[in-house]
Length: 80
Image (cartoon, rainbow, N blue to C red; front, top):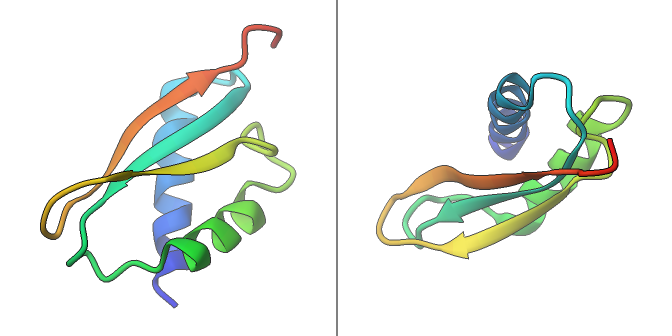
């Protein structure tokens, strides 16, 4: 299940950019040939973010082309 590694990478990227601020949600762009199961990635996301500054942040998906897989954007919680 490479989605676990992908979830860890997403969490590391967003965590680094958020600089300790609470994150409300993250969106990733996934193309049809990226060979990533969205449901498995969402499941892994919940596991790897538990107990971190990303806990409770939603993971959303954006359609992309080809083999694209990238963090599209993330939203910081204003109340944090």
